[in-house]
Image (cartoon, rainbow, N blue to C red; front, side):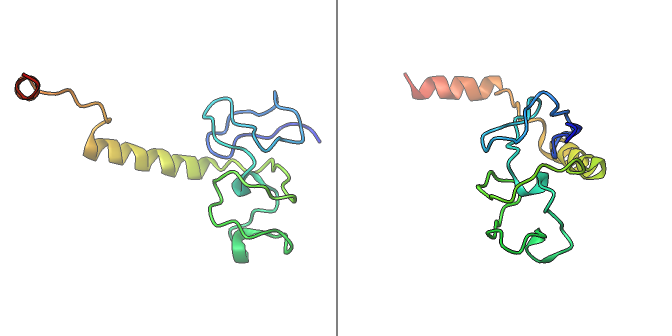
Length: 117
């Protein structure tokens, strides 16, 4: 199998990784676990349990590391439209709540200093 697979989450090439993917392999760019349902050839959101393999165990979180013996990495796992949606949602959240880096005001730091006196 030619290694033209990409990370399901960020689209980074996984050509440097050897097949079969280990259960502990992670994307070199976004550090997402790769032995997950969304990265598998059997993953299909249109079927019950979102898996085409009838004998596979039911996995509720399709983005979490699992121990499925039917796992085969898919060359179509990365969906640019899905990533664009996730990026837009992240940008909207950052717009509402900021980027998570809040600097304390001088009043906050002086009040905290008074507590420890």
